[in-house]
Length: 512
Image (tube, rainbow, N blue to C red):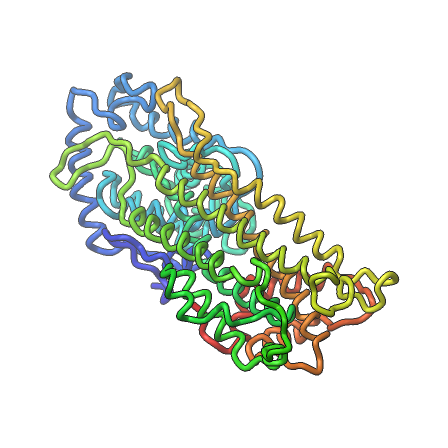
């Protein structure tokens, strides 16, 4: 038994467990309680399979074909046909971490006993995930209703020994051969099992959980970037006072302001212009209102986390086997709750990035930078400094605004009008992943720029935490002010520092 296994029981898996399995490659196993509950609900399905009356998903077709009765001798073929026809995705491969998150979440629903799958089917699914076999899932194919059908069908296809997977080393292999090499028997699906494997919001939920993990890091990093900019632009930290933020008691705003106070404590640069000789009354909004915007994004993420928590506790399938043994059709597979918050997060991400880009721009304009050279160039005119680094940030922010257009309002009917309203939650999740990458890059440009500006304020010294971030940037190979040089590799270096959390660690303080 692997020591890093996540145990999947009848209750919800923790968000942290999803990240461990998806990103860190942790294994999984099913709890004994889950095996017992699945066996009980399977007895219900087996009894109905012998019934002469049609039961959806057990002895009928699917979707608009739900009225078609399927005789017992053709039901294995029915399940096979369902998975083969629904594994109709197209486009680039979806990232390994997304597929692993999707698989863990589907396994968690199977483990509740509400789907009616056989124990051996769930065990084979768990074994595939535990062995690091990742079915090839394509970008397009889910409308976010009746589950993430094409993505989940691609996984079920591999479970049947068809299609392709990537092994733990990332090598593309035929599913049958990869299963065999791991000692896993391909599954011949029985009644109801095809539906149970594909009828869930697992793809969009998995991406939401991964996005929330990333966003927690990025919002704290946004506070670091803002602190460096406020400091290097000779702004004031008085607006971050605790009593001011208690006047508007949004929890995210309070957390961001507390971060900014901690990051700027003891700054020699801030102290240099606190006297009566300073005639500036108010900073621009991109400096003064950072806690309000970063905080609103935090509160949006908190709402999304609450939705994700409820979805983690759900058993999404259609039909479901209820606790008292009924088999009931339902609409719980509709992805609207998840789709809405995915779209909401994309709005917050675009706004945080937009504010960051505005701070970067201020450094480069002599009319607003309070004594810094044009574009932070060593020899303005000969050198362009950070002019085009800002263009990069501006171009990304422009795209983030387009990505903030909600996918969840764009329903399109399908399945001969049986599925006449869909969530587009998968699409919302895919664009949020791209948006988070964009925010990472915009923050990196601001940090590279602010670090150079802090150098240009010498001999004045920044605060300990912001000085430590600048030192981490320099230690990674990003040089200080000087003649123009190739900036793209330096930006990419800081992108990696932001994404890894290294800059948060460098501050030496705990940021919320």
